[in-house]
Length: 103
Image (cartoon, rainbow, N blue to C red; front, side, top):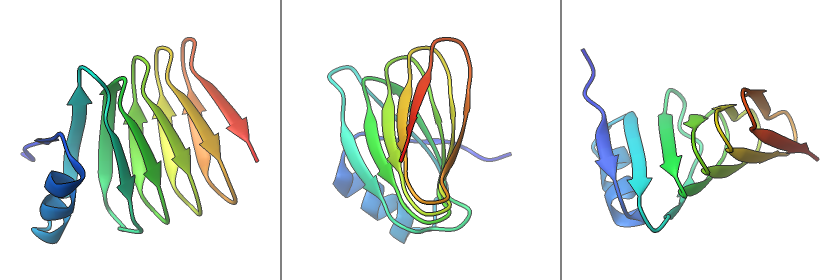
């Protein structure tokens, strides 16, 4: 069983990726912004007011008011009021009141 690591800063994210941790959860009451580089097999969960930019083959699940910008082959599943902007070959699955802007 995989344990999900809570990440609350870019430093914690960079360290987790350097340590090879691929199952991360980002949740911060005031919102947090992180950048995810091309990392095949990386999975990210964003909740609350969290924001992220995903590159390459990264994947994410966004819930509540979370938002993300996806580039390359990145993909996301959006729930609640989550939103995403997709570029290039990025893809998203939308549920509930989520929304996506395609570029």
